[in-house]
Image (cartoon, rainbow, N blue to C red; front, side, top):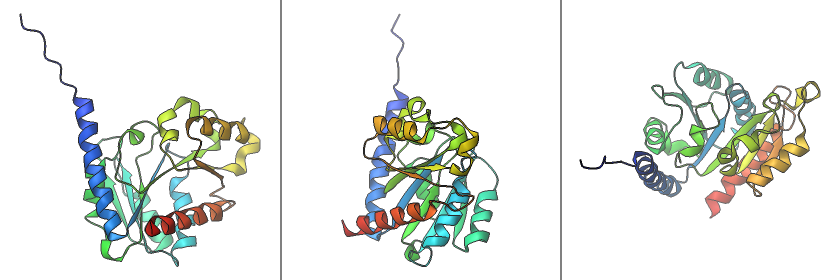
Length: 224
């Protein structure tokens, strides 16, 4: 009997996606568009953080947002109403992540001739989105205090690929067993170069620091 043939599908999928992502990133660079891939668990405060950040930056940068979810248009509507910037919803059809081709499809429906910064709010989880390159210029994630300071130990890939980690909900730190110094230590174990910015999207504390970091990232990227 002939041996069973084994097809390494996962490897093939990743290789194809990496090629698509590299091509997309190159296209965006030529157009002068910075793509931020923002990831986190559900309920970490991504949308609230985005609203505060966009309102701080929208007079300095031309911004658009793509909201990715399995279903609903709640976040896209919320962003548009709260900031007035272009916002579209991407339905993933049950997929737990976005890849480069899905990202491209979203970008094809954006006002690309009038944008400096596109923010992609990825599907909420700490596993799948980290595995697929979206073609972004930069990766960011939000970790919220209630999730615990040990998440960098449990989800190493997510923290290793991010240029910046925003630690949200610092206003409730007194009510949780969350050690910010330990969290920073664990993040640096995974990624010594990652910036760590504590904020409270609810109160606005620290959001200006994140907005300043993002503005500087866009400017540096355009100058390279």
